[in-house]
Length: 88
Image (cartoon, rainbow, N blue to C red; front, side, top):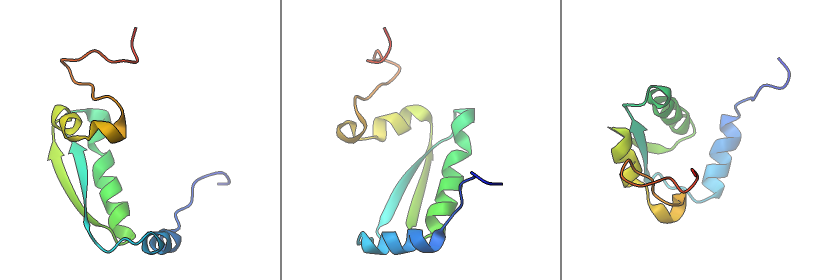
């Protein structure tokens, strides 16, 4: 199965330690009302915990996830009441 991604948890743990991560809780926002997104956060949580991260997964609807994201890090905040800057 050439060309598939391979996990390297030992290298990930090493890089995490090198970055200075000391077990601080990481909030993972889990969207529960969009079918295509529902399964992503639990898988991400498992992978993050496998490399030693302390994950606080918070389940909520997509609107709450969007509202909780800092706009300065993720570009403009788009909600159902605002027009997307990427649509004409």
